[in-house]
Length: 129
Image 1: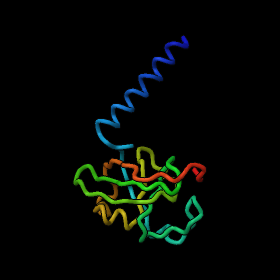
Image 2 (image 1 turned 60 degrees about the vertical axis):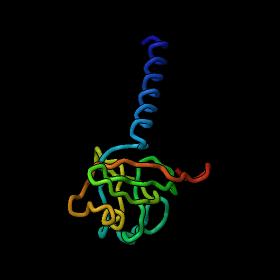
Image 3 (image 1 turned 120 degrees about the horizontal axis):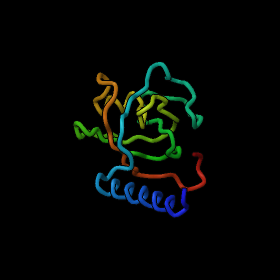
Image 4 (image 1 turned 45 degrees about the vertical axis):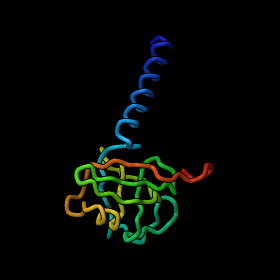
């Protein structure tokens, strides 16, 4: 494929991503799920012990320590969590919330919800990704 075509396609992707972010105000939109009792006390990907009663979450790529507002797009409810684990490992999901965060958001019975993520704070560079 012509090199210029690759540059054009990459540029278009960057523009679409920027416009989407500006239009929605969200870093990412997708499905959230939660995890709880079966993981209580196990070691998370950043080395902490999982506490289902803390406001934490698992994300595939955000650096550990990133603070994110999770907004349920159906209800408008939101919760603030800190990323301390990796996941979710179910296709189509973007974040796994702790039990406490899911309870606050009101998604325990539903199991999942379409959400938008807003990054509130990123750890200083050099942190573990």
